[in-house]
Length: 309
Image (cartoon, rainbow, N blue to C red; front, side, top):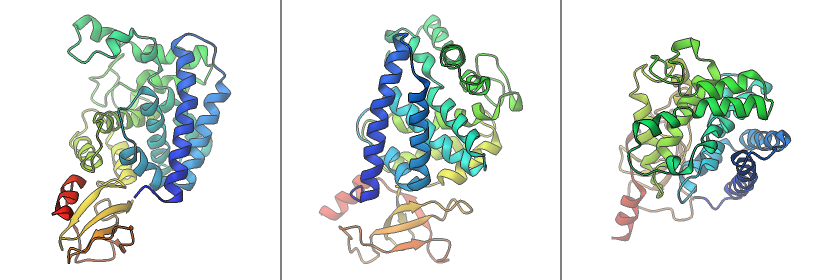
């Protein structure tokens, strides 16, 4: 599904921005001076990419990207999802750019922590965990003092680990005492952590992450932000492979913001078992076909086993 010119363009752009951001992060890690214009160029390019190809971009970051995720990928993808949420909140363009910049830089404080702690696979000691919990403060200082971005962008980085119920850090703020940017980044950051854990992507990944986040019940996340996040990504994010109640299998190609359970589906295998190898299956809008609905999300590995039998 990733062989269209649009996907090609998204992939090339993402790869180029990843290279550019890697240089920025390297400079921050090594305390070298950073031109903020290079950060602004990345944010601007992301916003333009999402103006043109929002669906292909989500599909790429969820399923097209292979291999382990780095802090650079997490930062880019957080900025991408933040822009989509901000757009659905009807933020004016300059606010959207501020939000995306905050999302891109929210974890920069991690770059200044000892690498053996950040890359530790096992359990951290209490002392090491405490060190990790200082990263939002480092992020704030990098964003406001070194990069000279506005206070709001710095505070978003400072507060992104605060929780709606007040159980977060560094200040245990709760509810609307946490600024909106930070409440958005908190959701995006958790989603990104869930979808980036697996080096081998499968189509359950977007759906499973959405289910986990949906079960939050006002503990970690602002319920209003969560609503917009679900409207933005859909219960079955773009690229998810799903089984319909008539036994056909399709791929989600567009989320329906007003009906998150009824996206547009491109049929991959129809109810007779006929497979569309060249992606020529029909596109069905589930809001328009009352008899059809999604029975469950499917792991693509199951499909390839089915079709090879």
